[in-house]
Amino acid sequence: MTSRPDTPDTSDTSSTPSTPTAPTPSPPSPHADLPPDALASPLARAGLEVARRLQAAGHQACFVGGCVRNALLGLPVKDIDLATSARPDQVAALFERCESVGAHFGVQIVVLEDFQFEVATFRAEGAYVDHRRPTQVRYGSFDDDWRRRDFTVNAIYYDPLARRLLDPAGGRDDLAQRRLRAVGDPDLRFAEDALRLLRAVRFAGRYDLIIEPATAAAIRRHGATLRAISIERVADELTAILTGPRPGRAMHLMDDLGLWTHVIPEIEPMKGCPQPPEFHPEGDVFVHTALVLDLLHEAWGGAPPPELAWAALLHDVGKPPTLTHDGRIRFPEHQRVGAAMADQILRRLRLPNRIREIAVQLVAGHMRFMDVADMKQSKLRRFLGQPHFDQHLALHLADCRGSHGKLDNYRFCLDQAERFRRDDAQAALLPEPLLTGHDLIALGLKPGPAFSRILEAVRDEQLEGHLADRDAALAWLRDHRADFEAI
Image (cartoon, rainbow, N blue to C red):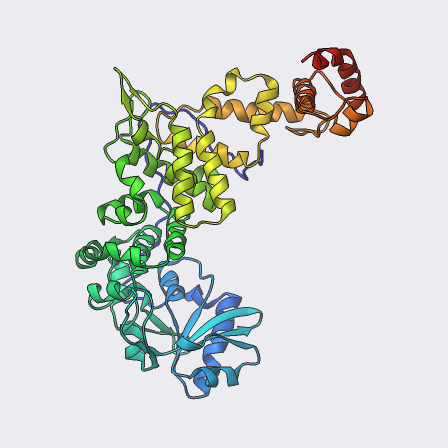
């Protein structure tokens, strides 16, 4: 089991849990320039030099997109993109280290002081026929460039030399009003690129924005176009939503906008699926799952890995098809059914095998915590020492906090793991096995089906604390050899 950097508070609560909120970015004043320290980092200073060289050569050059948006919100700027009137060959002529990565779109990667900057020529785009890519791209003007962008908050430009914001779409005011709005006609923007439907959800969740009514209505009208684009791109956006801030809110927003039915229809039956109120005072399976997603960030101690986030979304996907009423609400074997469904869903989304396999294991194992207090020591050590147990534990913590709030089994696992490490000479939950098949052959046993049973029995004795070293294991096996040969 890998310890998280900070052990969460584990105080019990008997009331319905509240959803933790990620820190809300500070809205900019409608008339504010970038904060004074926005250009203080080495990255920003290098970006300033890129813009300076372009402007010195007679070209327009501005920071644009996420770096400007984040700076206005007081959030970290981790990369800087620039837009320029310079053609790609003109950009390349100004920098020693420059690589064309999107020749069709006029994009160059400039490397300066070991930082990479995406420098894109102002462009206009032709008609879109596949809901993803334009049929034609031509170099254009500043006006052409901002009009083709998706949302106003991503269409804010900043001239770092003049220290001047250029905001033709009104994105700065939208940030101040906590509003996400499409640039221009929202129907046209979403008809151009269906992935923008999911990007809207991601931005609304990450930056705590409200999607303005006309943009939201257009998303509802265009939901079915998601089925026309690459499933891998859909999966990438969903992963970004699930691992980013406020994924529970994003889950509700996906529902409000009618998008689940087009990407993961198995989520729909969670809505209205009842749960026993004594264990789930928070509400139905959908409400519970959204809570777990939000609570997962705290349980993990930061943004969860993709496989854990997907497991949180799908951990109870098996409840609706297994729902029974026999005087009580029950979901027999929902974890087994849910694991099979999760495997099918993640295969359909073509997630990497590693992510899929771990997520399915997490779904399949999330109910095993109910039995930990009754497990034999050998079984408990195997449980605590299984691969990715830190993720199992984080999911369990979020699952409990998103329902009844009782953390007895969570604490029990932490306490027992610490005890095993303290008591074992190797300070390991699962020390190396004392014997191998070679040892059995050396004793004159013939390889066969009994080998695994013998090794398993020796392993149990070791994990129960009855065998401390190899010599003790060999002596135990000699004493019990007849028992195994009689099987």
